[in-house]
Length: 447
Image 1: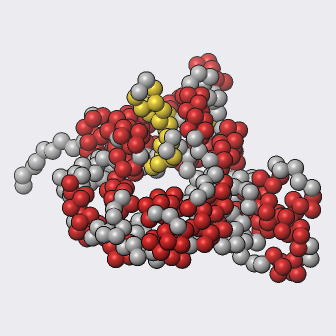
Image 2: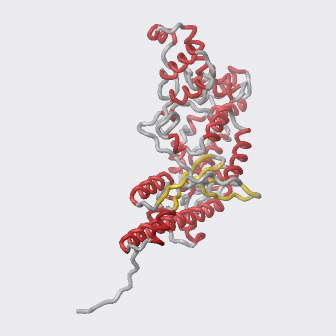
Image 3: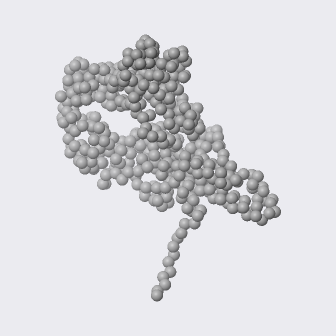
């Protein structure tokens, strides 16, 4: 019988705990600490106020500058963002995790200072909307069923259509898109097309539309780009099959002196060790008490160390991502580059599996929105310079800019993408085109 000696590295309980804490999302970590405070008497949960200087103020200033260039809908959301520092406090109340479209609209109605009958009518109409945000039932039918006078319903419907999200309360796709264009101050061909030419637009009959409106085809194509940016289902975001998961950003990205920097969220989950028990540990003459408290204090300190390590690892990984995806934060998804977790691991000096745990269920907020950290990882095409999201953006740009009299085939699109550093197959082009809801070349040809 031959004996072999092996050296095996095993994780101790403290290492396991640090790995578990590292992969927790912000909400999961809060729940973990709440359970810990119930099990360990020396743990006092704290809810530190955001520091006075700081990243949040910088972010708010940049966020406000960005919102100044956007529509009234975003400015309305900004008003909510300013007074709700802790979204967790909203769980279970109006505007919390399970807020419906009628609830969202009713909160806006409450701020309008309407008389009682009008306010109740608008709220009633909000409850009649379908999942897409449309008011489908004819108002005369609603008047007959509800007993509300038709003139009051008409006035209420007009007020409903002034609320956010833009387009809500419309009775048709045409009216929905027109409301959004009017809210944005857009006039001209785009508005005329959504009002009267949606059917030929859906059939890509651009020349027919141009003749009907008496404008050049290139103006029709320009209007098409504007129309594509509209939301045909403004209420769909509230139409969830079950309770919607709340996204709580762990990180913010701000621009400082021309460089994008990742910062941890102010007031992240934390706790402190109760001072009374620390004094009791130092002064007690009873061995059983000292031994019990020593174990509890050590357990709490281990968790504090795990939280500190989680924060440090998350920040270093996030900064490595931000540095390598700088063009995304400047130009958008078309500039997203392929990035592997192994690349971040090499940059930070940790194992790839640690990066995987660090980015799991973590979210980053920047001026372009809130993104899971996993969004920034992509293998890209073989030898290519683009990831999937960037390839889709480039594909849409090529199709938007093509000659509609001679649209590009999938093979031509494949060749054009390869020339831009994205060598993907024709089948992948077709797949991405379908995911973008773009027809084939024959469906895009101007008639």
